Length: 242
Image (tube, rainbow, N blue to C red; front, side):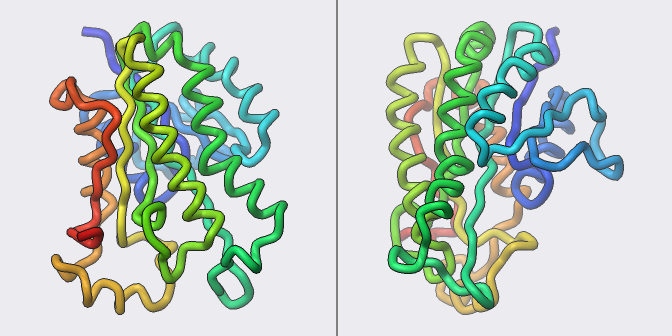
């Protein structure tokens, strides 16, 4: 059988890192995208030939990378996971609200968290269609409510990405491509903000999520087990949203 291929942005840590490990364990070829060169210490196979270095905050760099990715794919792409995201902070880690966030920061956040997903999905639509593939956009619980740590630019970019998921599901459906989103809540990664423990105390499940649990949801949405699911946003947050 043909080996399936995943293209993943934001693979260097947290949810992205766990997603690479999960798909690699399932026998997929994983092509990663990030600002950094391929790290030699990575614990999965594939190597530098399956890594594309690009800056998703730079529209030109993202557009130019599509051609490089197409050369690596050879005509088919089974899954695109738009996981990369940034959430700038103010002095001492302060939340940047709508009054404090300068226009350049708004633009950079939206280029990484929102526009890059449009560019990659549209640029690779033929490869996705050839494989009857799947797109998964990683949104956030911050996209549906004011969060004590996530900034305004981050939150609104994730809300826009959720709306984009619906639009893409409508537009890509006739091509045989499914488009869904997952919305993580408080997940135990290196970028947790101080004070997260206070949020966890109020969660129905009373614990942080693990990156591997989010990766499992992503894998489900890219597998045939979810073959009639499209246009959905799955909450992965221990009932934080209820």
